[in-house]
Length: 290
Ligand SMILES: [Zn+2]
Ligand SMILES: [Zn+2]
Image 1 (cartoon, rainbow, N blue to C red):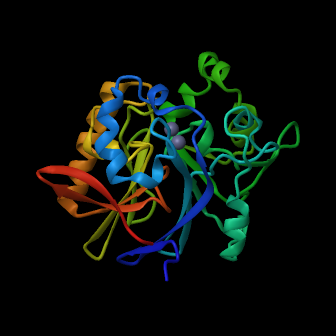
Image 2 (image 1 turned 180 degrees about the horizontal axis):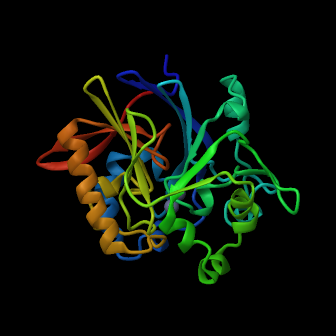
């Protein structure tokens, strides 16, 4: 019976679905550099995530990681109209992360660390339970850990003009004293390490999990569609530096293959758990039935 979790040695990784929806932008707008016929092999391989020939079904996943007595939440999803009003112009759907945590009997105060792969609007949605002058963190006991480059990048006016969400999701965490900024690779426990793989955003990070000889990589948005496992140069419009993002995919998936790592991908089908496989010399994504 699939229960949406994996074990990596002594580490437990539980998939949490904040939302699952047909993305409002067509694939041709998300990946403007990719000619329409180039999607054909992926439509055949992954029919469930093509609701129409030019669209994609995306999962918006967060993950709960248990390692050495620490409880780490990876990303906080899209939120709802109160916690992240900026998202409502795009998605028009309320996330269900709090209900997912409740179903696991995890209280908000049980979270020791909230780790952000990056600070896009769909990864920070449940940060605050109340905003304004009396802002409250949803996870009040947690250090909120992210890369400094994203913290600085997303405060720039040009970024916030595109989708205003800083004051409703991130800014107040600083005045509440809950923010830890990383400048480089950092071990969260001896089994779980944050590693920069920039390009999707300047401070995009991956979580590398290694325990008892087993490996997993929580890849954030290094790839948002399984086709990017095969086609490393397929850039998505949201990437701040497409060449750097392609280099990061090359390095990341070479590492995944070398270590036989399970991949954990926020926007991929199901709960986003899968492996790399080789077919006629090319790498492809294969979902794990979890
Ligand atoms: Zn993103
Ligand atoms: Zn995303």
